[in-house]
Image 1 (cartoon, rainbow over the protein chains, first blue to last red):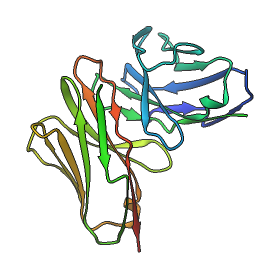
Image 2 (cartoon, rainbow over the protein chains, first blue to last red; image 1 turned 30 degrees about the vertical axis):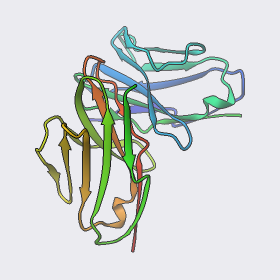
Image 3 (cartoon, chains in turn brown, red; image 1 turned 180 degrees about the vertical axis):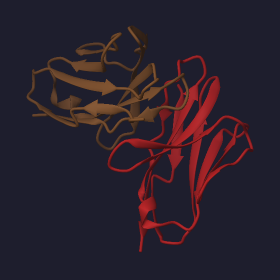
Length: 112
Length: 112
């Protein structure tokens, strides 16, 4: 059973560009969570999704950030018009029920 | 505001030493506490604790929860260099869909 997969592992964008981060949960997991880890900081919750539904987006910045988890395909975290402060590691986690979460390897976003 | 505090923030020990990592929390409607190990990649699940006083054990690692005093400890006996990592404590508030609130982490370094 493959673990949580994220791609790309590293992403470089210039200010103003869009970043798209993908997450494929573990097989049989329908709950997906996104977290952000800024340099020298802990993991911070961003959003919780189930298939085709956003359950909790209380940790998402109000502008430029969006997330989806379509019926088919991976979950996508989208950051529009990136700024240098968006540089961070973005982790996705999945679980079969709202319980123990298993994390992917993360996407390290660098904004130039 | 829900909060998780870990101590110490960093720790240097020698191989063979025993270490105790601390995690205290303040959260409304506590559901569970989780420990993860993070090396230069995905946080790896170690333990989930829901009941006070019941020790969870896996090899040289063990953990226990005190819901009255609102803290947990993670013990590692006979430490090895491979134990060097950041250890993360996280709490799941009930009725919030399973999102994790993380502490800052304890960076453990095991020297030969």
